[in-house]
Length: 99
Image 1 (cartoon, rainbow, N blue to C red):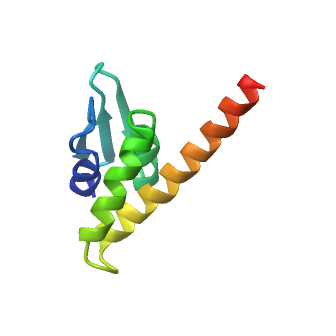
Image 2: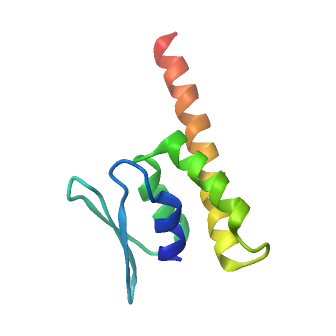
């Protein structure tokens, strides 16, 4: 799963480094920040603030290359859903601030 998320983030500025541990994963940012994640959803949530729309574009492309019904496809699909929601939530926040 860490490989699938890392591949989805490849090429993004400051792409996070994801490391598998016995108790979950760590997501390390370019600034040295580290998040401990226990689920794949938590990995995506840790990654979202680092790429937004660029991440969504990368995941859309990645989704086309994954084998349907595979674990990797499920991981990418979750990332896409969370990214869409993140971008939607942030666009509403920006509109409220600008209003």
